[in-house]
Image 1 (cartoon, rainbow, N blue to C red):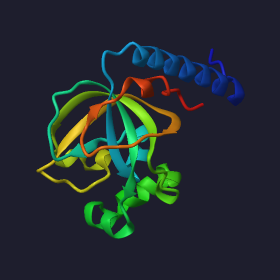
Image 2 (cartoon, rainbow, N blue to C red):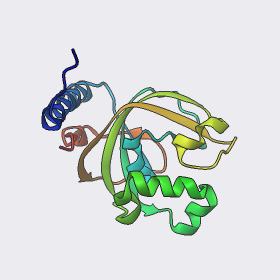
Image 3 (cartoon, one colour):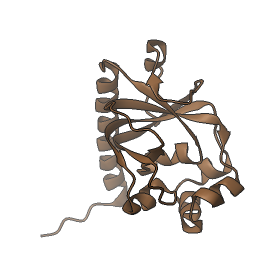
Length: 173
């Protein structure tokens, strides 16, 4: 027999699972040997929680937790049109209208575990939200989780996050 649960019960179960997952991630972060930080321009910083593949001009050998910080600078409409297909911009607006409209800048937004870095392929366009570029590398993340935003100054390259900021990392409820 098939059991049909009311939507509220399903939502409560999924919320509990999500909270437990976030608690497990936070526990792992607090005991990590190192956490790096990566500055990402909006609207792409806000897309990290939607499975975005981050692209960079440099390869990295680092594997581990990375805190995503939105830079003070952002991509304007003209710049987005140069690096994105129109359907990619529309998809970003649908998935995360706040990232495109508000352009939160200069804050930590999310954290994820970097598990791979490889040359960009044509198949990466969809999740990178940019046009294919053979000169880019794709940074692949798992367990990406939004965090309670806090002010954080960025940098042009990935670097080790100072310990005083690690205690500020909390899941966004």
